[in-house]
Image (cartoon, rainbow, N blue to C red):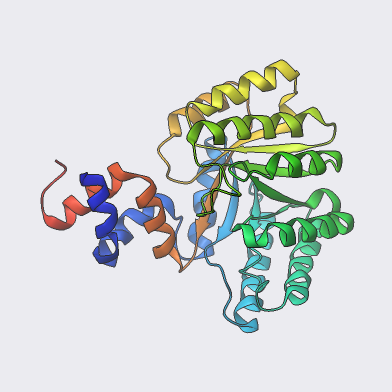
Length: 302
């Protein structure tokens, strides 16, 4: 009950308090801080994906600025020899403003990534953009091949079919559960349904030759099931990796996976749009959110 009350209180928690917690989930507000965070992860044996926080560009100038910022990120990765790639949201590139211009912006990033032998992950957003995102991915893959990939969300009922089609194309995909609020008609709601869809999706992708899968989950019960399916398929470790968000308290699990010889990648967000991202993370982590509110109220750690 207290956790529920905490989630309702987050909108009135002072930004200075949220900022203190944001340091756990966000690498910083600028590229310099982000590259430092990636360097530390690389030293631990992890790779990274850099993401500039933000979505739904409000005009073309904002979308163009996002492209310019991502070009700087790609250049910094190359210049500093970081083990990292980038992830972008199509809404951040203005897909809701003008789909054609947004696709041109994406192509600009992909051309730079190809020139630097890097990689761009197209994030998946809410279901209103699923078809469009997959269509853009197909066109970009035709032009830039292995330098582009996208995401499928296991809680969508359509994902098994999408995975079958994408597997046939030898795609590079991140598989996540999905975070957007979607109607029951198109999305599984029960935890076990989502887990089953997740494992089946990963297996479908890995069963096809030429695919590469990012197993993106913090679910400690799900990871052993995925590994069991991987072992049953006899999939070599260069066909997949495990992925997690910066700051989510699963470091012990990630360290264990790395010790066992599996590739591990950490999603590293940064930028000025840290507040909405951090409050989402707090809502997902009631224990941490409770600690924040206790701090605000002067109640100590409890």
